[in-house]
Length: 98
Image 1 (cartoon, rainbow, N blue to C red):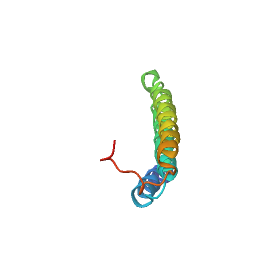
Image 2: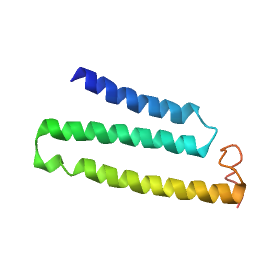
Image 3: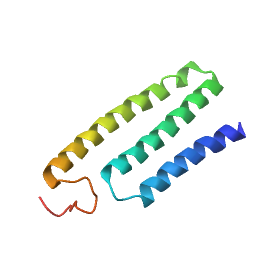
Image 4: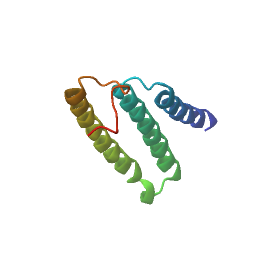
């Protein structure tokens, strides 16, 4: 159990560190968010299997559905940003402009 806990916590930490330190492109930030969501999904799935309770079996599927919605919104924002600003670089974006 300790090795699996270490693996999932390392996956989550690496995704969080990638999101924190890799701020050049919007696509890389979205990929780091997907990695975080994947590690959370895998950890929640393993946790619900270990509990063997029917009450927690829908939680991973709900997280997966929210993750798919988050990915589609992120890709829509990526396309809109690339069309309006010409690039997906986060340096180009300015929140003060309309």
